[in-house]
Amino acid sequence: MAVVGTLTVPTGTTNKVAQSSETRNAPAKATDRASSDEETTPSDEPSPTPSPEPSPRRYSGVSAKVIKLRKSDWTDVWLVTLTHRGQSNFIVSPLDARGAEQSSIVNEIGIYKGSVLLNEDEGTETAALKIDADGKWTVTLKPISKARQWTGAGLTGRGDDVVIVNPPSAGLTTVNARHSGSSNFIVDAYTESSRENLVNEIGSWRGEVPLPDGTILVTVHADGVWSFKKS
Image 1 (cartoon, helix red, strand yellow):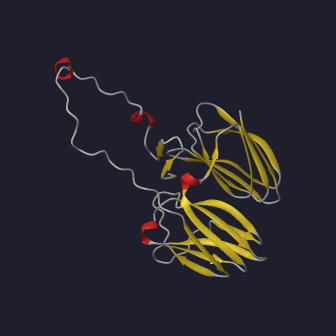
Image 2: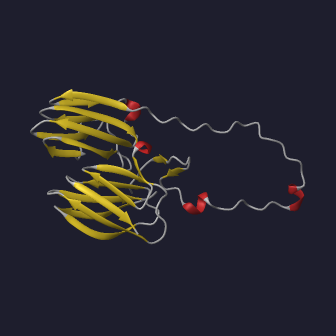
Image 3: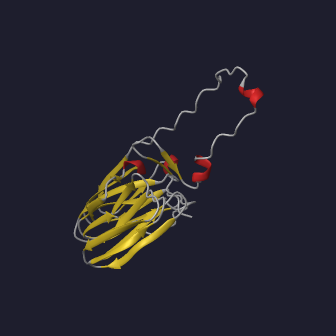
């Protein structure tokens, strides 16, 4: 099961993975007449205080490096924004607590700028990031609530990106997608409890695909300019 963690959108609502809409929207249970006539008093228990979002973690360097993350950050779901100014490989791979290398989150050649997810799969733990580069690079970890917002019908971008669908999709929604590039064009949609691949092509592509009901997040892996339009 894919996990996107707790996603707070600007409206103040919180989408939490695996929380059913039936539970969130269930009506309050009716009380009997006798209890409704009794005087009620405010509870002495304080309201729970939401946990503050972590501040961004920014790292930079030149050439190969292993970034050791704070232990408190190992299991959080992160939006990772990366840049590289070089001519050769730029590969970023998570390492678990035992130092075992996991599937790379970025594997490109030359100049790079983009955003990807880290720890989006349930049970994932990242203790460090292994950087393979020949030029200057930056890596910034941010809460996924800081991702770009898709609020209207259309959206455009270039390269890898992570986008919050605000409001989440409802009912039958389709997306007309375009990509102008020479490499992979992969688009995934995340609901509160699942992940679904929408597009997996190479090179320039255009087509229409359904957007799953309740989509709250979309990730794009691309090397060129892309566009989406909901209908």
